Amino acid sequence: MSDLYLVAVGSNARVPGIGDPRRVVGAAFEALDAYGAKLLACGAIIDSAPIGPSLRRYANSACVVESALSPPKLLRSLQSIEELFGRTRNQRRGQRWRARALDLDIILWSGGVWASPDLVIPHREMRGRDFVLGPASAIAGNWRDPVTGLSLAQLHARLSRK
Image (cartoon, rainbow, N blue to C red):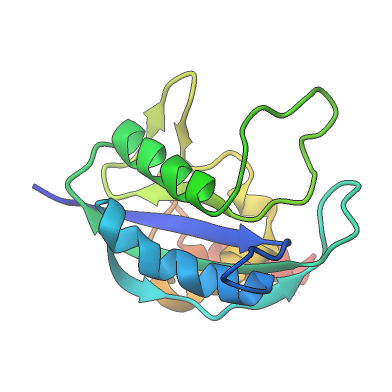
């Protein structure tokens, strides 16, 4: 049995052999299938300002994938893809917002809510991030946040009005 997942994709660093952040996002879409996540839809790649002290702009998008993997197993697969692209997880204190080659986050899951020490679905900060909700609402606008009951299109419209 397979589930659907909404995954946010971002990059603000060049990756040797791949190129600039926009190319990294595109290459990440291609890598998903090899790691147990069949790509069903992908949003436009947009540019966004960084959060925190990083000076580099991000390329961001979102995709809907189908996978037989449980949320924790899909998370491990996404982390393997990030590592393949050069991301390291041994972040020192105070370096949460540094430049990164690739960031893959599970935003929503067709199973609803998941809460564990390593993973919370829906993603805690998705409702306040235009760079997630913009591309996500374009490909999955009717998908509802199980916490608020609002669709991604509604969440994006509310955020855009602020």
